[in-house]
Image 1: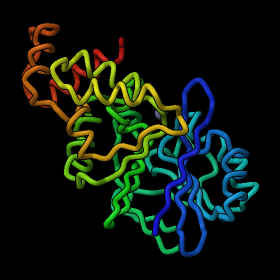
Image 2: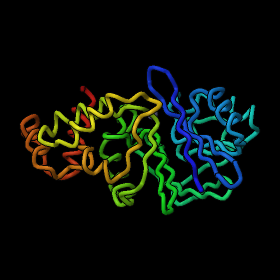
Image 3: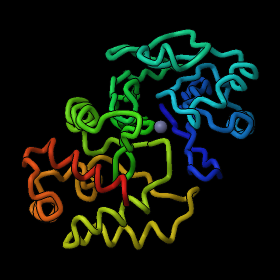
Amino acid sequence: MLHVERITIPNPLKNYNHLLVCTETNEAMMIDPADASRCIAVAKKNGWKITQLVSTHEHGDHICGNDDVVKACQCPLSAPIEAQASIPRVDHWLKHGDTVQVGNITLNVLDTPGHTMSHICLYHDSDNPVLICGDTLFNAGVGNCYSGDSAVLYESIAKFICDLPDKTRIYPGHDYIENNLEFAAVREPDNTRISELLDEVSQQTPDTRLVTDLGMERKINPFFRLSNPSIRKGLLNDFPEMGNSDKDIFIHLRKLRDVW
Ligand SMILES: [Zn+2]
């Protein structure tokens, strides 16, 4: 079975680092270490051996711990093939349709550019499906596109994430749910699920933060609710010239979230 250990990094960017553990072999795959020593200590304490390291994308806060993990654990590093110019010392380049393996656990590589133009997610297809989404998708939001392209992010999510099962638990690279819910509440003020969840989340700490699934995201995340009348009406007030396709709605929501 796959166990996902979410490790809170107490930095200003509120990173979450993840260890994907095969509970049968106690082997672990490290994802995007921002603080290598903290992650290695968690693995050691639990008796897990880090045998794989994967980068979802090239941003410094996701790859800065790579060298220290490789040095301490002697494990190979895998990263998206489009990041050949930007992620150093990679052993295996990953492309869409590849799989990665830790112990008896297999994960599928999804090519999801948009936040950066090279970005992968990992999907574990099982009775308890899991999506490791880096900065593509967040709880109640999506990644920024300052070094990417919001139209491309829309396509990635529409193609590879929208059709995954409701029960898919999502594990993004940052703890941004509170801010994202505040934005969502403004865009869709009549959605009581958003305000209720915001109350709940505001009582939590980064360590106790709710893990959402895609079923919940479809109810509260504006970027999954592109045909919602309130969201559309509000956006058309702000951008009267905009088109009305789902992609237009997504891109303009992202524009507003950028300046939120
Ligand atoms: Zn990033």
